[in-house]
Length: 278
Length: 278
DNA sequence: TGTATTTGTATTAGATATAGAACATTTTGC
DNA sequence: GCAAAATGTTCTATATCTAATACAAATACA
Image (tube, rainbow over all chains, first blue to last red; front, top):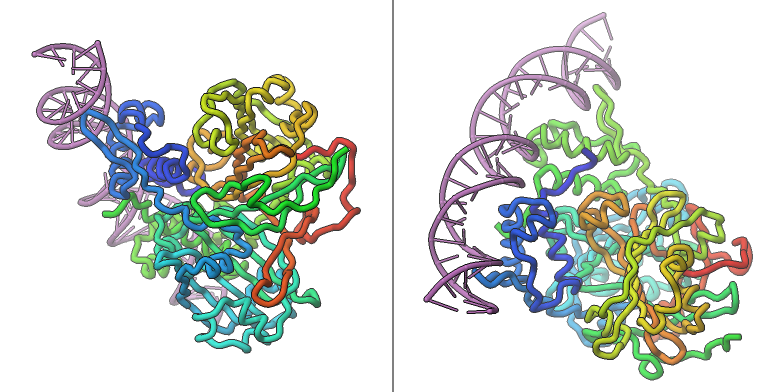
């Protein structure tokens, strides 16, 4: 047996939960009957029922004897669909109440991975912090940051608890110029799960960003985790180039808040001069 | 008892895995002894050992009788670090062997979510397909596409099995102009897990892309799943604007494979005539 | 070279997960 | 009203998880 597998109950529970939250199963939709689910997933009805009980407690489904099991509209707010790169700016602009809880603040030797990314000297120390950001009192992101100590000393614990890190850095004279960011998926461990108020084993969006100043020196290493049921990473692209060189390129765009985040062609989304195709 | 909780073994397994991958426990570091871990977490040694066995099989730790348990250099060698927007083009350019397996090909009524995204008329039908793309015989992505039937009839089952969909569309006279894509995280269900050769309950990168033509009409709805252990979504950004308007904006760049994925402008990546995006 | 510590292995016992089945109760639809 | 189908409930039996303990084999260090 490979790795450590979740229980069959939990597996089904998380699977159905995902489908509901993701909208694959739309509100009002009737799920297959318990015997049908049991057959489809090759599980006993006991297991099916345990998973459904979990979903019922989450308020995701309604079970009616004789009638069936129905998906509820428990997709309250996919509130913030953001660019992820300027997400915080959007939120502030929208006037949403944002606060950060500082969980850790220390100066320490740099972890190897961080040293490599920031291109630090051997033995150089970093300012390390862990924060959880809340929007309207629901956890929004889990942030782990590393800043070279020479820069990290320019702000205090209190600063970090109240002000976005990048703002602090730029206030200290750092010129953030370039950044490289990577987006991946992970699972929530026990600690993170509790902080972000999700189940252990839930999927999370993971973003790692390395920020460089105008001299190409690394100034910030950020590792962030987001709840995919509340937030997603959206970007607009246009098709540029001609012939074999024709490809997608990103459009610098502001995404607008709202439950429906699909672009509105023509107006709404600023058009830029497009290359005339042959 | 809230929801469905994972087993104690899996909880510890995920916790340690998280710490290792996150760099909290750096390579070469010796873990506490099994009895110590058992005491710290208040679990029996059996449970501790099962979790460690999982980590060992993942290649994250090395266990040496008499000596201890050590963290290995877990730097996941991500074969293909890509832009995700032009990933296929990169792969082709790199000369990697790519092939697609067509799992499903049909014309059917459009699902509500697809209709909304593509802005289809009521009752309009779509061409639906499911493919799995392989690179060097390892599964790379799981692709589900919906194309309005009037466009979908321009290509055949055989076309789709051999040629990227967007190429087929552009060959049919469709002018792909804009796209909106969303990246999220999900869990692998039983079916997907087998196709992508991952464990059930594994995290997956999920990308949804809606492509519009030059008249703003939806021409393709793509839902793709990627293995986060093999691939990640990378993008470069620069800091633009002044004052309060200062924000990140994306840089149109080609990323190159390798541990250091810095952008390469213009040359460096061999070009071929038949570069075709996903 | 010992001695303490570490991982590997085995056994026992109890708790929990899962499968399978039977039957009751409620709802739907003819 | 009745039959079919759905969820609710209860039961038995087996497999797996977890705890607790004991001992063996490998390693590190004074």
